[in-house]
Length: 123
Ligand code: HEC
Image 1 (tube, helix red, strand yellow):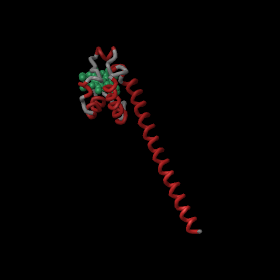
Image 2 (cartoon, rainbow, N blue to C red):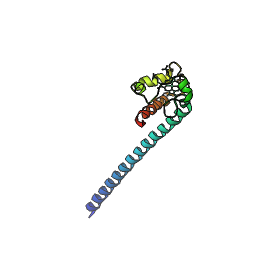
Image 3 (cartoon, rainbow, N blue to C red):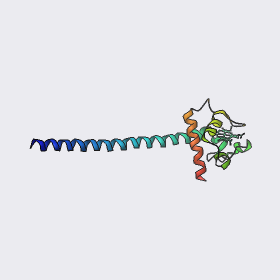
Image 4 (tube, protein in one colour):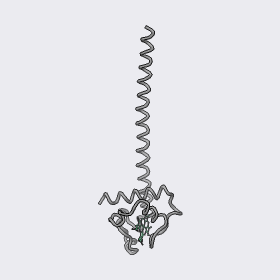
């Protein structure tokens, strides 16, 4: 009789542990997901406030940008650059493109590189 109870307790404890583990996994996954979408929302607004005045909201180039000869960020010429090259250009500037290392963090620049990649897929 007593042994029976102990077995049931062990089974119960095991089931609770399993449930906790599953719950925890969902919890972590949901945090990671939320974090990702937050990061991309942040990059969207960074791009709109810091880059769109020259590159246009879709990377195609604004009216001002066209007078400066901005390249189309959706074009293969830009998309073939590596993430490191893109990050470097955003950080140090190039020609008429201003440097952003003083006003953007490395994380923000990295987010913008990912954001620029998303232009290519939309086309
Ligand atoms: C004042 C206008 C201006 C702003 C603001 C601006 N850019 Fe540019 N950008 C340029 C110009 C001009 C070029 C072309 C530079 C060259 O090739 O000489 C350029 C080029 C680029 C290139 C491509 C470089 C290459 O070699 O093909 C990328 C990527 C880029 N900009 C990203 C950004 C991002 C991200 C931001 C916002 C953080 C931004 N730019 C803000 C004017 C601007």
